[in-house]
Amino acid sequence: MPAPSGALLSGKSLLPAGVTRVEGAFERGDAVVIRAADGRELGRGLVAYAQADAARIIGKKSGEIAAILGLDGPRRADRTATTWC
Image 1: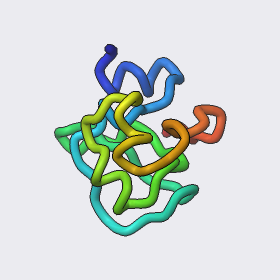
Image 2: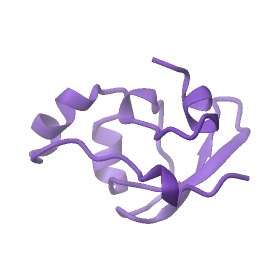
Image 3: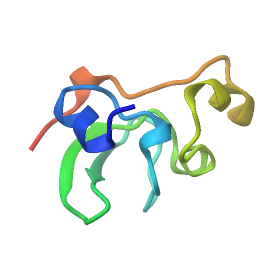
Image 4: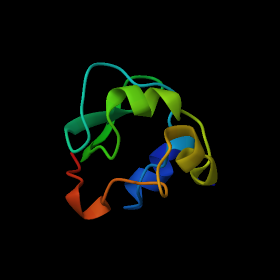
């Protein structure tokens, strides 16, 4: 799996497996800043999960998410909706 920064910079979506933490309050569809571990801004995007759900699936594989959240299947942000800086 590519590193989160590599995935984002190549135009791919960031899946929960690449997330190490979430901060702040947000709801599904909100615009958020995506940062590297050192604090550098990697990009901005629309989130597919509310903060409470995102916190529950940090680091999880796509196949595990539906069972954790009680959904039909995993979601990810639409990369076409991502604004890169």
